[in-house]
Image (tube, rainbow, N blue to C red; front, side):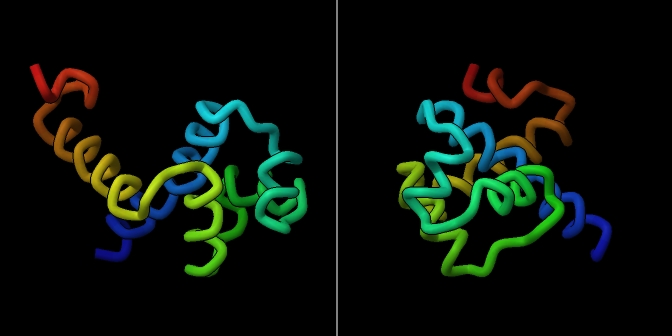
Length: 92
């Protein structure tokens, strides 16, 4: 169970980075909007640090994503990998 959870947690940083880029923000801009340093945002995106729940929710709010949307997407991606499909082809 721990390995599965570790694998899931490792994707949080990548997902935050993808959301930030879709929003057109730099690490510095996201940091300013969340009162976090650019360095800390970088550490989160590289999974070198884990945010507190409050920090995580604040980041998601700035990125325009609810926790449900964030984790529903992760679940869809996991199911797609299990079935051997790419996540973007699940709805077809």
